[in-house]
Image (cartoon, rainbow, N blue to C red):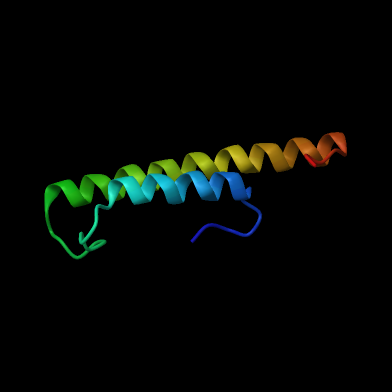
Length: 69
């Protein structure tokens, strides 16, 4: 789960990507297959990237005193 300060658009994009990676009926993390492990690593990297972008945006907003609304 992503922190509450992560932009909802970032959360939405990660949720959509997860939906594409985890097909219908495929258990998350239950399979010991190599493919499942690779998907988990890739999703973790995408979540990290989304967190980094959101953190940069929040930091920039604090520095400039602006919000994106």
